[in-house]
Image (cartoon, rainbow, N blue to C red; front, top):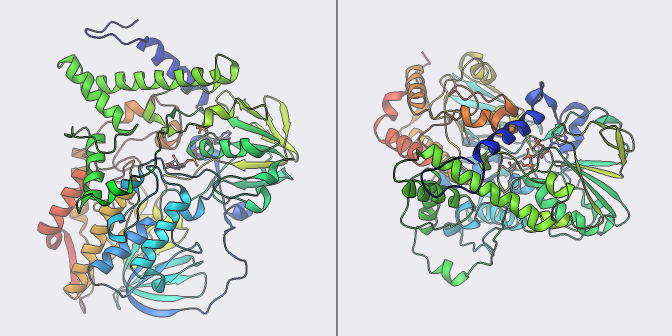
Length: 605
Ligand code: NDP
């Protein structure tokens, strides 16, 4: 047992570390992120939209607008809302799906909910007047709120749905982006803001034999309710005579499994790495409490949450959830240790304690058997997305549910009739991939379109060999172009919509500046990009050691984490709130200095 100078922990820290490493090593594989397949080409059908009637057609649009917004998820909605707030109404939103909502449009699987408190996750609650019914909202409720945002700001009149942007090309002479789509549209826009979302690019497991399976097969983000019956709240009664395999045990699967368990004749859960399952702690909203909140409450609550997660103690923990309690515990340990524990040491101790509780919960629910043992996660809490569920673990008590643990190796093969692990075939009628998304991919890659800037340079080229950008959102050589949701040298947060809000404001403010001042083109100077990189490097926080010890996953690039600001994972190290303060200050003081601003008629340098 490790010796501590104060209140000794009830676990052996060294043994835990060794166990964590051993479990990580089981899961490491040579092909890293290359193990996954894109849902393109022969796998394209995995991303067909099951929620629209087939055969949609419309006339092609030819038009000239001030702003083109690519994407109608919360990033695009926030950008459009902020343009409206600034009196800009000449814009077009192009969205591949049949409606607004982004990830909440696509992810309608049974049990879908958000793990971040609705009062801080659902943007523009005060503006739109939505009152979430529960602390953790269902996907359907969040999707309905996205639609409400669309109606509130009159955005439906601006939207082209079921439309994919194919190419964005900067026309220097006209100082316009020329945008073409798969529906033959030709849109010219002075400004472009793209918002693809981190969960838009479906990832399939490269399992040998995946092509051969003859039963029903689909990805969790394109749920086949015709096949399963029911809806997102449950009722998958058509599975009563079906053997169902779900591959993956991440955030998505943990929500799906309890619903399938209720109805499938047999449910086989194929696990590679167990998830850490915290208590859900959901409760109905006290509408009177919410309505009595003073104006600006949502913003204050959002900031309170991110402040705590950024290690800035607050007088009150407004959200009071299982994210914030980890940091609160760290603070308490540091106070208790009276300076003898550094923040990383205190965080590690808080983490060990939390994970011990999580593992104890598995035993409390399922006893001591093989299944319980296999469901215990052995890694630090923040190595993977922590999950919150009260019905996932109990699902394994049901006789029709079997955990097939693959010992960190993953599914071995698929055959025309089933799924194989350790040389044994498990015959099934249906396979559901809950295998996630290509989370770190840049916007243009997710969107699958070409972006061609000044001088015919593609954004792919710009991205090669060490990205240069300003604030993670703007690029020299790409005038009047913004990314909302830019994490690389930008920012991100567990409450992702908060960072979308910050960057949507940034884009809208700069676009407003350009339009108000009759600017033809503005883009960061290469010098400004270099200075920003220096700023990011100066703020660099070394996560490399932490992530190296983690079990592989998308957060550590499948075990090959490159924690450098020029690579994925290099967000601004001061955290999102400091990032916001920096870019807000920059707009006030340096916009005219750091941007090459060209009035109409002047050509590019
Ligand atoms: P994840 O990437 O989190 O999980 C994918 C799962 O598939 C993992 O369990 C992975 O195992 C498993 N897997 C991949 N390949 C294989 C294989 N060959 N054999 C067996 N298993 C395999 O995807 P999710 O869709 O679950 O979640 C993605 C993200 O979506 C989350 O991290 C979160 O950001 C977001 N989300 C958020 C929710 C919310 O409430 N806010 C709810 C749902 C999703 P392994 O762990 O070993 O890689």
